[in-house]
Length: 232
Image (tube, rainbow, N blue to C red; front, side, top):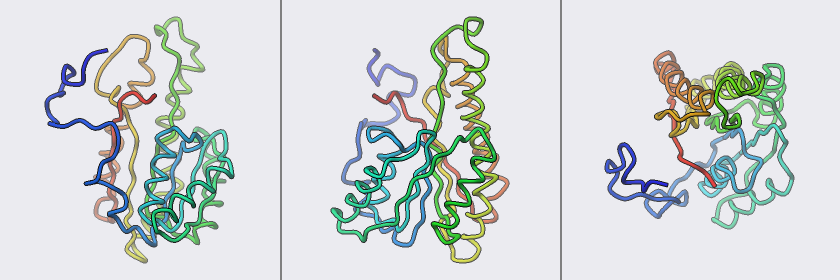
């Protein structure tokens, strides 16, 4: 595998990190009162759960984690523990089972989150994704290939349809952060044989995020994309 410095743009950042460091420690933030929704957080070694842990340590008051496979009670307990060990109050934490590609499933989750959060929602992290097996296009299963777009692109559409009004309402009524962070991929920036569906879906995520920002910036929305590299 090439060194990071050998990749396109590898010299743009002077110091590369593979984990958080003191300057951006969640312990330096105060997110008291903030209500957070994170998709794709069922796995303890995954990006979604690590993100939820950071919000817990930063003092978020309520965290909902959604995943196709459900979220174990054990993970919820660990998130609460992460908050108290950081000297923060124990947050409200609950899990939801959802298929982001299905609008009815997302709407059902909206009802659960709205009730659990008392109608408030500040930050949405769209982390859940699907990746098809690496195969040339003509050798791929069309249903599996298209499932990647159903989750990675239509899933964003369904999430915004359900939860953006809740965020905008929170912003208007109590001045909430009204922030959406969409997890794209470094794969959106390059092409590689066998992963056309995943990489193109993540490229679409970048432009869709920009479009949403332009359409709702005047109402206080902030949208961001992050592009992680490979995750072990």
